[in-house]
Length: 134
Image 1 (spheres, rainbow, N blue to C red):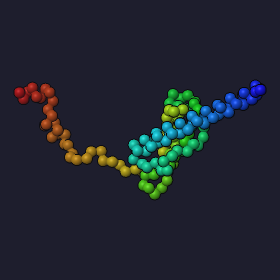
Image 2 (cartoon, rainbow, N blue to C red; image 1 turned 90 degrees about the horizontal axis):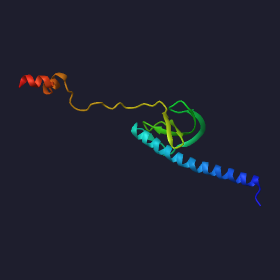
Image 3 (cartoon, rainbow, N blue to C red; image 1 turned 135 degrees about the vertical axis):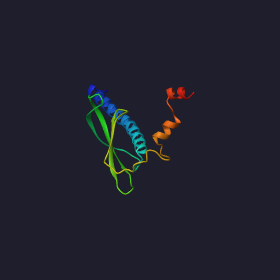
């Protein structure tokens, strides 16, 4: 027969296994979010993985302390140096992503012809100026 202590230990083991299984899903979500973030910033995520660093009580966007899983990853901009980043996850929800300071290439804001305001105003008259011309 099972005693109450045996049932308690069995439930404790099942809870731990379920928590680890769920943690694997959170890690996969963190990896997907890190890939998206690196692609948006035009940096390369190295090794294609995130590594669990620790559990911590972290303030969320509303200022409440919540239990967060913190994962580390490495990225590169130039291909020569490895830089670190971290991602905080509140369950399956993103807390924040931090990247180590890194060099970046500024993208030109406007490519092509420069528009002068006098020329633009001549081609786009105000509605009240259009009535006067008619």
